[in-house]
Length: 281
Ligand SMILES: C[S@@+](CC[C@H](N)C(=O)[O-])C[C@H]1O[C@@H](n2cnc3c(N)ncnc32)[C@H](O)[C@@H]1O
Image (cartoon, rainbow, N blue to C red; front, side, top):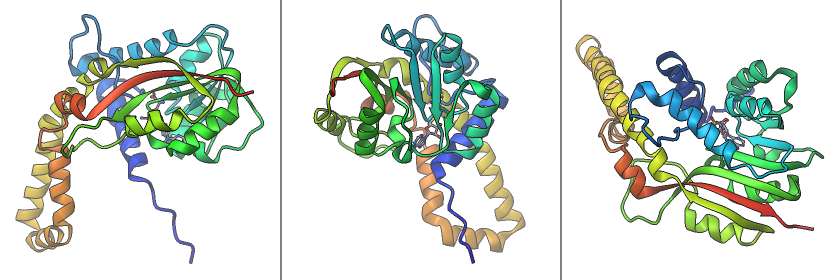
């Protein structure tokens, strides 16, 4: 019998993020947003912060770029903006749900490689490769190897994403390559650093917004469900607690302890915009 391929929990996280984002916040972007200037930090301003993030990235694209490969394009919002600015954009998207949405938005204007970036097969070459909050999902060595392979000579690699700092202690916040390891790895490739901007302060507020949502919406729903099971299905409830006790504790610690906040993000993560130029012959 054919075994069904397991779904990656990170894919599910992104798809849930998309559903909640669309319904509650009227946004399809799947990134933290850029909180700068006089933009108040509250849920209502999340769509604006996410538009600002997209515009911020676009403002950092060097002159002369014509073709872009948007790796991990989500539902294609950034690619859509880039196409509207006159760039020719192809995308990489391994998630069938997000790919379908991106296809609907981008139509024939963009070719979408429906695979992990690690496994992309193409003769195409691009002036710029963009990783907008997608770099952390891709194995470091393969991400850099394939970027160099797919870039035109003098092309650019633009990464906007968060990395792990060297801060001691355990964080409930997952994700991100180690920044020190990233610098060590990339120094071995024919990619020279052009820009390295620390935008942790401008992106961290997203964590306080999500934390507020989890405390005020997620946790009460979670508590109600557990209470319902405890009172109405006592035996099943005890079985679930016995079997999944560690998982339940982990969920409580990760999502409902209040530790997913901007302060901890600023300690354990460093959000950076990095621009490198390909100097391989
Ligand atoms: C946080 S979302 C960012 C989406 C979009 N770039 C944005 O800024 O809104 C991460 C994206 O990375 C993609 N992704 C995850 N693993 C990947 C991989 N191995 N190769 C390419 N993309 C990947 C996901 O499908 C998703 O589209």
